[in-house]
Image: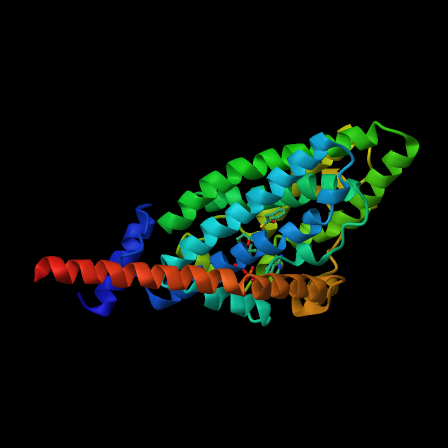
Length: 319
Ligand code: FAQ
């Protein structure tokens, strides 16, 4: 088939809601966009283990420690499913990790903020996982098969994470006055960065238009952000906590909450590497990469030796 026909056939499949699979023909730009988005998503899951991992040794009880360990492990699993999905597009996992370490590939802005008190673990589960699911439920219907299927499992786990975070916030907001203050303080610090997670306003989102055409994305950054705000405000009310936005109010005409403008200077500053913890996060991932080098080398040497043995056995059998 000619390039033009291939492209028309590809778009017709997308329009008919038929998933694109790894061996199907796809435009180079579709492949590139997916590798960019999936790998950035994978990096976010892996870097996202750091702020919470920081509290595993200081969880207030054995029960909380077990739950947090399981959650952080889940995030590692999400990173692995996503790197595997990117590999089905021909990307090399080592190259992708290198791009994250040298700053060429992004990861979610949210993970460049520090976790200062135990309530932050609750706020991350409630708000950060809550925002992540809002965006990711749409991705279970994304057009690329391996990504869509990975997202089904990830969303199930993220919804458990969201509930465990909310449960921590509930316990703290019903605890002593000091615990309630800690919960309020963490809501104050995580609220705006959580809204920033959805990415720039629709008019500023460089990839959205094409991503819609290819059904990689099905809802816009602003639509998802509004959906998250609308779902989260009543939850804050149940906790008895105040969302740090004086302009927040229900708009009956729109059927949505209105909220203040986002500080996009802060967002881009964090995305460009100047957030409170960007350097610390990259240094931690670089150290993990260096410390694990011998394991990768040993595994590769073993795999090579095994392959050589198999080739030798096949040659003997054929002789
Ligand atoms: N941070 O044109 P758009 C999680 C970049 S997972 C940094 O709108 P797009 C689980 C964007 O990459 C959280 N950069 O881009 C968890 C692009 O730059 P580029 C991550 C951002 O792709 C919980 C530029 O701005 N989730 O939290 C951000 O169409 C707890 C222009 O933006 C995913 O990755 C940002 N927040 O839409 C783990 C979901 N937003 O690449 C541990 C999959 C935008 O041209 C603990 N990704 N940028 O250099 C997506 O759905 C999309 O990629 C969006 C951005 C919606 C994030």
